[in-house]
Image 1: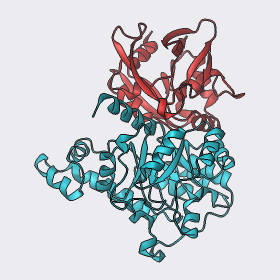
Image 2: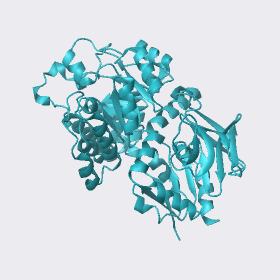
Image 3: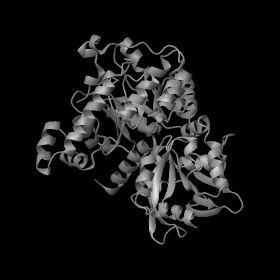
Length: 192
Length: 296
């Protein structure tokens, strides 16, 4: 049966995720703008964009509890860049958090301004034996992880991808490449 | 193009992609920047005067004081953009040195060069440029712009020119997709646009960069109109801080941009916003005062 994979569509790089999901068999990507769409999903992607903007709209449109409920039912959730910030349970220099679904501490704009955005290639053993392209746009990093949070990738000494249970976070943007490997890795979490 | 310039251009286009579905707001002080961020803006445009005041004041409008721009960078965590005069590459060098996130080579300021736009390939920092039609958009992209905004007529609170420019770009794109390969060189000549970019648009049916709408957007309905017409997002200049209740209007425009296709939400957010900015009839603006005519 086709798996319904939601892409939170409040703001940001939504169509990029949807285009890559279309390349994976038995996946039906769905842009999600309303809380009532969330319970029927098999998985959810929170895309890159501006975390303050998306965070405010999540709250305003009562979507926070619906997403937490998805986690309780063990449905996979993946946040890229802004999505990582929204899923974190601690944000440096900020009192507030958004969803708090994974025990990581996040530093926003950790590399600097747009002038410090960059692309690199790296093998992430958990995901693929081939090197994958990692695109960092005003990217955050993970500065601390809780118990049982598995670190998937580091750039120098900075943590840029991690997972725990069915929550996956990446500070880079696999949706800005034409390679669906990372999306396939995420989709495999539904089946298992 | 060297690999380095290619990669830089790609991440610069990528940042614009992350702004999609969002509202970029003009702000003149750190306080306004915080209000904009709090309302859900995806970025702010730091400038000394909003276009409506530039229009009123007359004289030469230039890049803002770097001190004021730096204060705004300090005040918010969202990306900060600032404007330079068309062709003024030294103003652009200064903004790149400050380390802001995006430069708008803008017709709202008084052009510094009446023949040439900035060679944007010479910079690391991304540029957004205005366009009234597809040819103008592709010329700017050919010069290295990583994002386009349709010009509209800034500082008028009148959306009619924004609609005209976006509809023009869209219909010219549609036309290109119906042409045969043998017709594209002549079409490139007619559009006065680089052939490789004309070919890209003909094949893909879209611009190679993100395209926001700008110039005259004053209400949530205006923002949703531009989104329904196919804009990737909107710039709101004078429309917010020249209105009666900027906080509330800013929030409403953010919600309208996300839920542009839901009339029930649009009706709710449009309620009770106080006085909008007062508008100008485009037909009453003398030709020499039309900002959109600047640039080529």
